[in-house]
Amino acid sequence: GVEEQGNSVQAAPAVAAEAPAAAMPAQYEVEARLCVDEQGSLVHAAPAAAAEAPAAAMPAQYEVEAPDTEDIIALNVAGEVQQLNLPQVLEMLSASFENRARICILGGTAFHDPVSEALTAELSRRLSAQFGEEVIFVTGGMKGVQEVFANNCLTPGLYHLVPIGQASGFPGQDVEVGADLDQRKKVFGKFGDIYITIEGGPGVAQEARDAFERGAAVVPMIRTGGASEGKMNFPAGALEAPPFVAPEHWELLKSKEASVEESANAAVEIVGAILSQMPVPQPLDAGEEVEIIVRTMAGHEVVVALTTAHMLPDLVATAAEALGLPLGQTRLALMDGSLLDTNCGLSIGQLGIPSGTEVSAIVVNMLVVRRHIYNARGGAPPYRGSYLTASDEVELDVGVPLCQQFEKLLPPQTGPFPPSLAAIDASPEGAPQKWEEHGLSVDPELCPEEAFGDQGAVELVVLMPMQGMD
Image 1: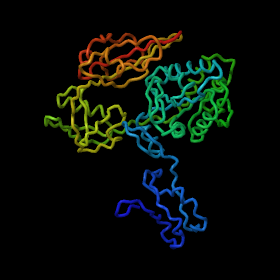
Image 2 (image 1 turned 120 degrees about the vertical axis):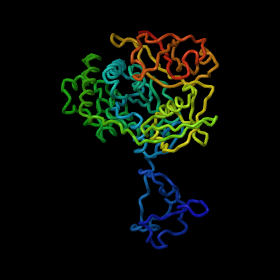
Image 3 (image 1 turned 90 degrees about the horizontal axis):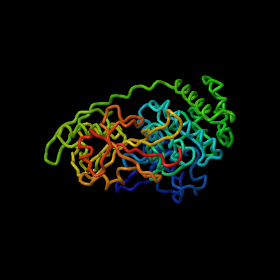
Image 4 (image 1 turned 45 degrees about the horizontal axis):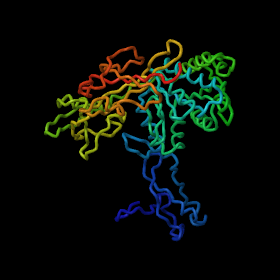
């Protein structure tokens, strides 16, 4: 509890209220610590010092089980690290990815067989080409299997769960979750609908076991060996074909004599069969209506009516249009001065912004430009070409030429060949999945407003070339 002076003190649970005074001798009394239980409520956790009390200090009839704090997980929400329980983290992540099925990739951090690497690349291309519009792909941002999968994925629906403060450096988008690798693994093992495993050691076996035991589908590329062929306490049931999967397809997961293309295609067929057994996603809730009051520094005011299901960029765009402000330079700030992060991927409802909230509209000397990154891919047709691997926003200095802002415009380069820039008109359908010379080249000597305007109607394309041999 909290005393009148604001200090936390020992508060006995209701079930222990009838314990006699002698139940806990004074020399063993300690101040309680507050933590969050699985329901998100503040509770007391006995500190380590209390462990020295002899068994007789608390009679059995008055013992109260200490709450479990192991499932408290760190999550980066709009740039702020929050400590949440595991169900809360999973709920927030699920909401961010709408109702799309989640395919998680598990595998070793180094390949023990070059055939496994070729199989991973082919599997990534075929899965993303077949299901890229209806699922998202998730890795843990690790080297080896997950890196090769990411580098060959042909869809922007690619995400990497990485510990707080870390970055994968892979195509796609990082999601910071977990204070360390152990916390991240807890989330990863409970987040996916389908897990595909390639090679792997004890860690892969453990994550596959966690997923299988809670009812997720596991598709092991058995031919690759390691955990994926049943070693290291890999779940035995996951090595058996589900009843709705064609036996000949499952056999191709095992056969070392099958070609890489045959095994990859079999895995695609199996994933398709699994997806067909999953419940049809329900439409997202339209949300409750909210009214946000937006004021400018000049004293102009508008009331923006949206719903809790709308995203923050919707709020900014509606406010900028109503106030006649340049969209690319408009920011919204709460009354305490903190800017709303339009890149957080959360809706108005998820951020807990109630109706009647007042915000300030600020025009800054920076321009927000939507950026689409395409990576060139080799391989046989139809896979050869440049494919959309990430879409995000970049902030550029309005008065500085693009050529002096390459560190903001371009993702980190991993080879000697520089990327090229292009511009395309914004579209409600989003950027094309494959680049087919849809836009115009961009003169790097131009300033951002000259190249892209200030209303978000023109977007940046970065074309990343292949950096090695085809």
